[in-house]
Length: 77
Image 1 (cartoon, rainbow, N blue to C red):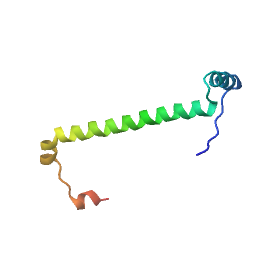
Image 2: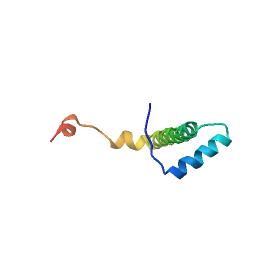
Image 3: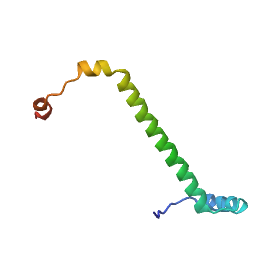
Image 4: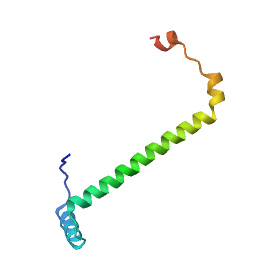
């Protein structure tokens, strides 16, 4: 996917200098940071889902006894 970003010229120039010193490119640096953020977000979502599943499992007896669904009530307007 191709995207367009904007940044102050001085920032772009400084990162290009950094990239050249580290034998990489501005594009590679941005892509690497985006990948790290995406991986962290996926990890947080996965952990959140696991915590939610753990919570429901720990409260299973309560939910089994307390929650009943009535189709007519659920569809009432």
